Amino acid sequence: MKKIILVLIPLLVLTGLYAVEFDISGQNRARAAIYNNAAEVDGGHIDNRFNIGFDSQFHQNLSFRVAAEIGDIIWGNGGGAIGTDVAFDIKELNFNYNIESIDANIIVGQQYWMDKMGLVMDDTFSGIMLQKQFGDAIDAEFAWMKVKEGPRNQKDDHDVFMAHAKMDMEMPIGMYLFFGNYEDVDASNLTFMPYLSMEMGPAGFDATAFIDMQMQNDDTEMGFGGAIKAKMDLDMLELGADLLLATENGLSTVSPWYQNGLYIYGIGKYHDGLNLYWNTPYEGNADMFMSAVGSLRAPVSEKIALFGALGFLTDTGMEMNAGMEYELIPDLLNMAAYGAYGMHDDETNNYILGTSMNIEF
Image (cartoon, rainbow, N blue to C red; front, side):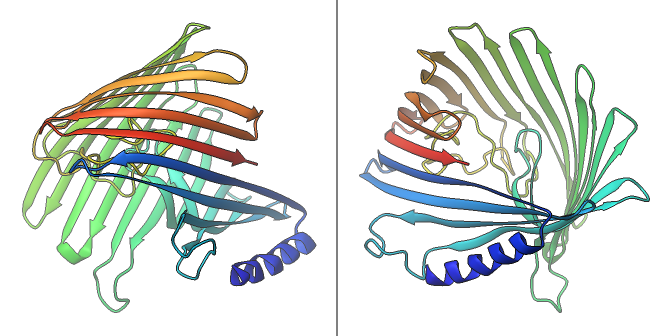
């Protein structure tokens, strides 16, 4: 921990001295869960994590960002101390330069990016991103992502090239284009992923489709699919639906974090590390895959809300979950308690009971 402080203090001093503007943002999260595993063996654990980011504006055309993560720290590992084996990661380290001649921004270094639903990526990457607006309605992004650097004198890297254009209008539509190249296995993929969003009064709708060509040696496979997220706000009740479909071969991903609202058979809002059977089942799948989830949320007061979901996954099983959200300090500190029960196709039954407390600043 002393080493971490020695790194952060000079950084804070330097950015404070030279920055025109300086902002700090972060998150401190603690959570606990008891559950059983795929063999129905009971267990549980508690963990916490701290994220912090520093943004500095050195010049009207130049800004700098660094963000670090400490954790996840599993309680009981090393007693009450944060030992040297605890992960301390610099998640983001980049500068953002405005190129006045072409009216575009270029971001160089480690940076965060996600596609509309996190199907392909919702993570940080090392690389270069160019952002430019065309006219008043089209926003574009172009990126080179260095996913894997093998031995530096060998051609065994994994690179992904991304292009994204979005038309900002009454019904926003956009398109992602990904080209991934895996030199060590002589494989590549080409992915087209259009999407649209729609708001009609209390109803909202997001849809993404994909066509994925997977090439290796002289063989080419095709994957098709898409995801739909819909919501309906009825004042005292919010209804939601989540549908994900993928044909054989599915979608090539980079670092996805698609949330379907489940905890045992997916990635849930309050815990992303309990899922037993998810493991990105829409990538390289041998058969048709479907995840269908219906959800509801009922605000009880300004600070309290109840929520629940019921979902079904092909060749996996069914899950029911429910819980309560409580906003202790508005826009700063919130907590949740939840439970989930899953019935797997192999007649295994699983459960989760958990709590989560989160500070965001």
